Amino acid sequence: MEQTFVMIKPDGVQRGLVGQVLLRLEKKGLKINGLKLIKVTEEMAGSHYQEHQGRGFYAGLISYITSAPVVVMVVEGKNAVQEVRKINGATNPLDALPGTIRGDFAQDIGRNVVHGSDSVESAQREIDIYFEPREIQDYNFLPEQWLYE
Ligand SMILES: Nc1ncnc2c1ncn2[C@@H]1O[C@H](COP(=O)(O)OP(=O)(O)O)[C@@H](O)[C@H]1O
Ligand SMILES: [Mg+2]
Image (cartoon, rainbow, N blue to C red; front, side, top):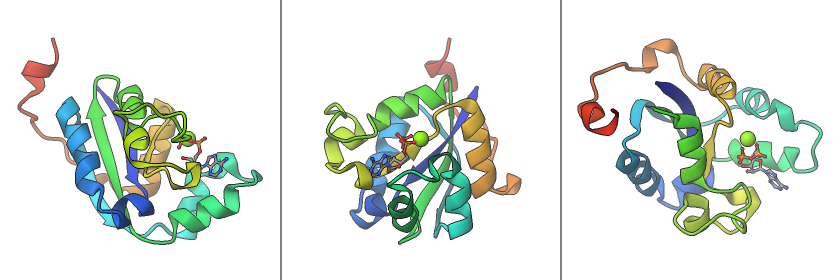
């Protein structure tokens, strides 16, 4: 089973879209192993988005992500990384298909509501930035026998 890291960004929380995002993850049968509302520090943001340092949008991205509370999650499932990226939709909401979170709820690339890790390695790195091991629960998820062969 694969784990990924999901964030409902400040715009998602401020716009009251937390439930909408959770609904889509749960509907798909993804399991939530960790979930909390936090304020991202400059240090966390710098570590999370280190690959984008030097890009034109970097400063704006850091100030956006640290501007107000976010919801962070550890999400588990078969191919969780890819499944969440699909549910989130393309980075630029203009390219995101209807039915995806960004396609349905966002218009601007700089206010695209959600984050999902792009690989298993990024997921582990991002989970380590935002979660203590004791905040991640392993438990028996009843639908599993009806989700996976
Ligand atoms: N050209 C851009 N202008 C403004 N913000 C951007 C731009 N490109 C990326 N971002 C922001 O940086 C985040 C990280 O970018 P990236 O890793 O490429 O996308 P994704 O979040 O889909 O993995 C995006 O989700 C978006 O919030
Ligand atoms: Mg990315």
